[in-house]
Every structure is written in C-alpha cells, then in structure tokens.
Image (cartoon, rainbow, N blue to C red):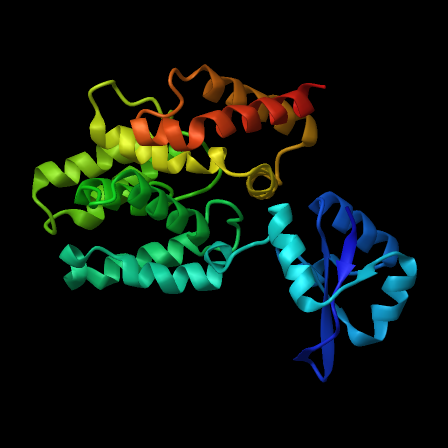
Length: 291
C-alpha cells in the first residue's frame, strides 16, 4: 500500500512529467497530493502528472520511486487503472464506429447524440457510460442485441440534467422524435418505451428487451470495488449541486431501492456475471453512508 512515482519521461509544456499514483485508493492519492500542494487539475482519472522539477521533493515526502512498468503493474493489480475505454476522448472515437449499420444513413442522429453525451456537466453519465452499456449488451447478447434495445441504450441518458424520471422521459421523447420516419412506428414506440423503463430498472417479467437494457445499464454495479468507487465518485460529481446531507439521504434511498429489486439482474447471464459483486458493492456503500 503506497503512493508510487515513475521516472519523468513524458514531454509536455517544455518539460517532462512523471506519474504519481496510489496502489491502494484514490483517497490516499488525493490526500498525498494535497499535502504536497499539487493542483487538483493535475489529476487525470487515475494519476497526477507531476513535473520533473518536483519529483525528488515528492519522493522525500514519501512517494516510492518505481519503474514505469512497475507502476502500471501495481496500478492494474489495485483495480484503479482507468482503461482507454473509460476515457471520454477514446470512447467517443469508438462510439462513432458502433452506431448501428442499419442507421448508417442518419449519421446526423448519431452526431447529435454524441454531442449530448459529451456535454461538459456530465461526469458519470457521459460517453464512457454509453460505451460501457453497449459493451455490457454485447456480453449479455453475444450474437447481437435487438436493434431497438441497442438504440434505447444510445438514447437512454441522451438528455441528462440530473432530474430522475424527467431525464428519462425527455430522452424517450427525443428518441421518438429523432427516429420518426427512420424506423417503423412500432419500433420507434418500443425504443421510447425501453428508455422509460430505465427510470426504475424494473421491467416486467416477460419483458426480455427491458431485461437486456436494464441489466446492461446496471452492469457497473457489479464491477470491482475500485471500479465501483470510481463510479460513485463520478455520480457524486454529477450531483455536485446537492448538499452533502441531501446527497447521503437520497443516495441511500437509491441503494435500498436497488437492493430491494428481486432480482437485481433480470437475465441469467447478468445474474451470473454481476449479481454477487453488485450486492456486496451496494451494501458496502450503504453502510458507509449510514454509518
């Protein structure tokens, strides 16, 4: 358990930079950075970029010098490593190629959606979340999810103002407006219905489309503890306008609602892959919130 720093080899702004990471937690990393007087703007998802001129000072303060390969190995082992797919710039590039081939003629719809998903106020509900949901759909349906489910994923948080229920309804209306005349009316209606289902993630027992979409949207809950903690931190940023006491009360209510879902995941594959870890993550967060 340590704060690590690699050799300064990364050129930028007329100098070279090293990476400062923790192999334990982001809380440990941020606490060390605050003691060292590092600007929070130097933080990039899983590391701080620090100039060569400060490297020896940071080692004196307790950072352990390691090789670049060792730093990456230990960061990956800790579960704190942020992959390229979790970085907005890469996710947006990949998503342009993931737009359904059946809708290749309406690239303008894709471009509008990517612009919406890339809005500056988004932290969790951004292009990385959209890509993660599409990846989860691919896990749940290896031979390919139905087009209406895939499109519902693209639209499900397309409008995001941090207002549960209202956001889903607005996103559903956007889907219905954008897809009118592009798909048959019944398919457009199904996309809108599926987007609305994500408001409570409680599809009916016979709703196979809803089960796929909701399980993919909730896949993040079943990630590693470190990945789950990054998700919670990003959601908190999305709700930065909410006071701490209100956040804790509201978030605890959300966690209890999720834990009360029976089952949390509606597909066999989702339950097998994510349910045990998701329940552990949810209970751990709830315990921390309620003391």
